Length: 485
Image 1 (tube, rainbow, N blue to C red):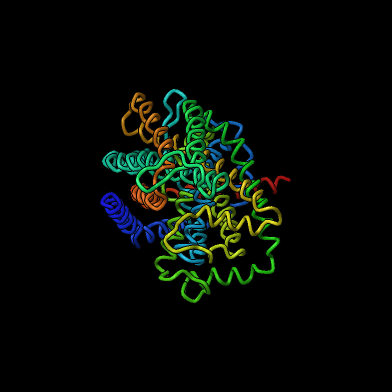
Image 2 (image 1 turned 135 degrees about the vertical axis):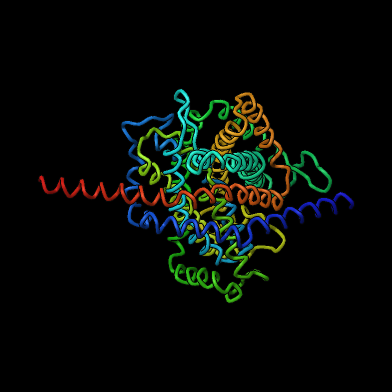
């Protein structure tokens, strides 16, 4: 009983810290950064999305870097398309009501401009150390804002390393995998391997966690090139597979879409007006959960994606900014929206039991009841999608946090030690409680965002000025070319 009380008090403290970090201050900062960058870049996410999608699959022929632009994007996507798309969306809707999906999309729209700026700055301020490229917020803070801000760059690197090893990169991902594997193979927990206090763990959880840990160790030792190669194969395949199955749910419930959209918009501004709304949900909670889980999923504003973008083979800052921007479009505008719709169309969120935040079970319920075949097949496919998404996120965040450690310590030995700690964190992740895991991840995400957002505000005029100049010159060149014809 005493252990239980201590555990509850620790969870309460973590929850309170999460509420402070993800209070109105950070929510306003993230939205303000996206709005300012949207205006200063001339609504880049609206007028140049087509170009961005084209550049995404067409690698630059000339350019310095370690991996292709597509490889860098896949590495970034491997880190963003994960449990946030499957578990996080469900959790946001359950805790913040259906309106959370609306705020998730609002944050993603402006987040695309934020992601563009991050990719732009990553190339502009990266460093080339004998063909080994290092860049991201720590360098555009130090070089863009000036050496006197190096302490802020170090702070970002510290939060980034901690986010990778204790939050978004390891524990949340492996926890999501373990829940999905256990939910499919042993949903009634009949085969217990061991117990810790009042918590029991099945053999499905133990074996699933051990297998993922082993594969993680095999890949992360190979560095960015191996992570990029694995991501280029797994990410597109699993993303397309997931989208196809969710679209089946959407199309088989197409007549219910108008009512679902109305409930989302209503829930965004007046959660209590939606039938079946979770008791106690307010506008602040809807915004907080929607924006918080959206940022958890697409990472716009966190400063993680530019770390991968800095390794891209390119000379063109704008081009890489556009490619980086597509990550948020694919991750949130496409995948998270479809996940949210599948949950709402099947009313799976209304079957949520207060006090339980097992988001994977809500999404699994949507698939089992929404797909027109045996629920076991649906559950198995979702388990595979979640497992591969979460696994690639583990790989992507290993790269991010390693680069943060490299900048922080300047020591390759420290990076090697960090890899071992990272793998250990993956191993122990399945045995931590879900609510604490998500709150810890949220806290480190928020702490990462603060230094990065300061840099984005400070450098937004440079991003805007050079972006507008670039497109003006391109338009001028096109006009001159048409005249010669």
